[in-house]
Image 1 (tube, one colour):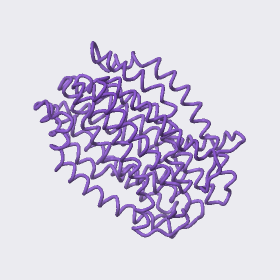
Image 2 (cartoon, one colour):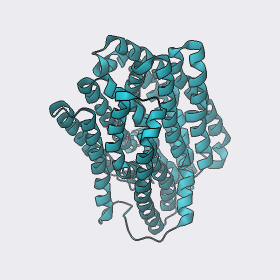
Image 3 (tube, one colour):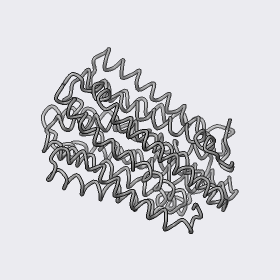
Length: 443
């Protein structure tokens, strides 16, 4: 049953509303993990290392989809809350076209810079060539990647969270099936994994494009529009925090790889890659919850419904606190089992991976609050505060930690960096919650 944005939300209704977004992000993370599983077990750790080196670079370009999706959602949901559905649909249609244009331009830039960037990250010989093969196959799907990420947010605003989930499940299952065919059966190795990823991304982009291009019962539909530079700039500004967060995260991932090459060699990069794959699945809950609640805050902000804003904020913080404890505990208990799935064939690598992940998992106690805080201020159309939280969390704190802590603690210092960064950022997020509670009336 569809839950309108204008409803009053109990805990049960809030979880029902956000669950499609949470499941969507979990499926996205799982089909990203599948590449690593198949490549590691069928092509070896050299190929796994190559993917781990190039993946942050590839994902940087998909950040544009997060920016327009979250930033556009904040503007569209507020416009819907003000009762102007025609304007909301024009903004939605314009942003979809901008995603396509940006995707084409970014694809050209990404492919041109691929070899210099991978070389700068320390790749050489077989790892360099494998990184190039993977990147040159996946990067042409950048436009689809951007569209898929942006529509994840747009679907929630359209009160069609289930469509977003369906889109993700279909593309994810396609990726898993093609990985099995291309890598396990046909033996195409790393190239097969890259092809499976690219094809699944195209499928994930086509489904919502077809749906919103036709007459449908949702709040949104693709239609003719007049270019609105002010609205586009507002969407850019609103989503700047998500852009910053994703760009910073991938830049920091490259820095992690450089440090790990220095302190632990190729095994360190492979271990970090496994931790990142598993981390994606756990973090998907926080990301999905933040994406799911953002339109609710945006709509009620536009409708000046202060009582519901207070209700949503209080319940969201409670849900996040419970999830943080459960996920941190589960990650620590399951670290050995999860590491064995990827690198059980190499005892030294598995031991390094388990030790790293048990430390890394403590960051789950803090990261959800930071993600939610950034998303909530984006929903209030306050891109500046959202960007500050993201910038401090994903760039300043992590860069300082990953450069300084290894000097004191060695390899363990690299794994500790994310915990220190998230803890520092949650202090800033809490200060922002307190400072702006009277302006936005959520507490």
